[in-house]
Image (cartoon, rainbow, N blue to C red; front, side, top):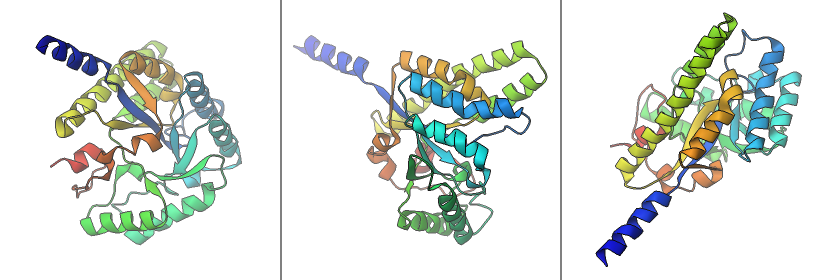
Length: 272
């Protein structure tokens, strides 16, 4: 009987699925000024097509002052593939450098600019994940955003994917294609490692699998290698869920204990 119970427990463990919602920040483009316009404009199209080909939908966060007639067409295309568009402030200013009321003005200004976009949703993501460098400011911003009927989208799987993108883009601009490919390969390995190490941290903190929220950016590296990353994550046992589903996990209702200047993951914010 004991052996049967052990086998059942092992089966449950083996079939426990790691779940994540993918979110994408800094739409329409991140780190793109040195790119040719056609290459820059391909970013959202390739991201949308890759997600669609894998039957994955994401919630993505738009910076209001980067929206113009050209980028709006690209955002329209991205949204028609089933992806939702949320608020990432108007000018991507840090909550650490301006007052709570000024920061909330940035949120409202972004809302006004993007609310007409298709698949607009009332989700909000802090710029740089920075929630304010004092407890009073942090709590004041949370109250104003919540009373504005926006749902804050935290991040459990934070990462330095943007560093790899900068290296990748800078290397491509020097026409070193082989080195750029090597950077992309290292990026894929890194993202798989950070996803699994974060999952281990969550289990160590709460003793169970949680529904993760992954942070990514709308950049050239992701536009070209997201398909490979999704395939690797799926092969490693990850399944992809919506942000709405992920936020049902009670871990995202826990208290934020962190006060400081850094933009850190939700797991570190609730860690005691």
